[in-house]
Length: 127
Image (cartoon, rainbow, N blue to C red; front, side, top):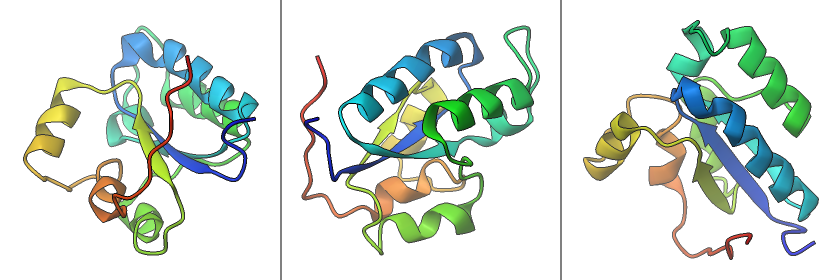
């Protein structure tokens, strides 16, 4: 239970072919005692692909976290200033997400909390 007392924002980007694999890290973080705040990209929220529908992914995320995913900028904006999360994981992280992070573009709910977080926390990766 190395993460007891820690709150982790877990942002899921629209790499639909790897969304299934993103559920396991959520479960592993929870097993370590972390409280998970799920955040989804607009693509996860609105796009049906051969890998699944938005409802399939939202249901899987709800079941894994026990929470409704945050979906909009107003929902995620308080995370940083109010220090509601200790860290944010982006999994899967698409090229678009990496490019927007590198250029400080915060036009979607998923990226906003990363720029608002106090950068003083570190969480050891789970092996």
